[in-house]
Image 1 (tube, one colour):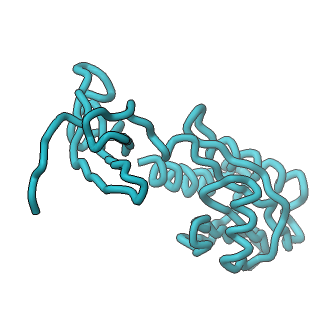
Image 2: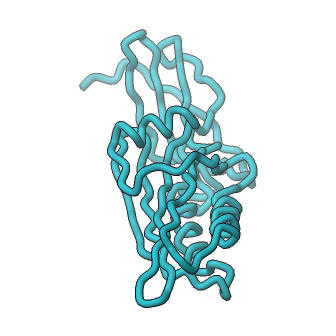
Amino acid sequence: MKIDSSGILCSAKIDSNKACYTFSSFVSLSNGSILATARGGNNKDSELEGIEFFRSDDEGEKWSEPWEPFKNVKISLMNFKNQSKTFDANSLNDLLESIQLTLSEKDVLASIKSPEGSENLNPPEVMLIATEADSSFVINGLIFDENQKSYLTVKVYEAKRGSMITSKKIDLNTADDFDAVNKFFNQFKKDILK
């Protein structure tokens, strides 16, 4: 490997969410542009850090302002199939609204309601649903009864490959305002917004 030149990709801004840039990486694109990434945050290993992209069309002499492609994540939230005899339509609507609120964060994360689908989605179905809604993830669920209790089996799919990334069986106790469901989706939200 030979170093032809060196320079500065970006400058940190003291006392801001962009005070520290680490772990840069560069790749030459087929059109001659250079794409670079770096982790930016208020300090190294910050909870607030995110991946930022930069682009140069003049062999690295000048760089674009950074942009964060993983902001404004959209999630397709399908209407869950309800096979329960005790979990009524109003409870289902309340559950979906609760999940939608949990999976929303201004300018960062939005959930889009999608029609009900089959219980088990195959990769082409996931990719089609995600493409129609311009979403990164698809969430599907089934509500059913077992031992005189209602449960939700939720499945989360990654849109690009159409593969399921997690699933969970959750006890639906409406007395606690779907606390277990919201806990699951809060953790999912935290994981995808890292």
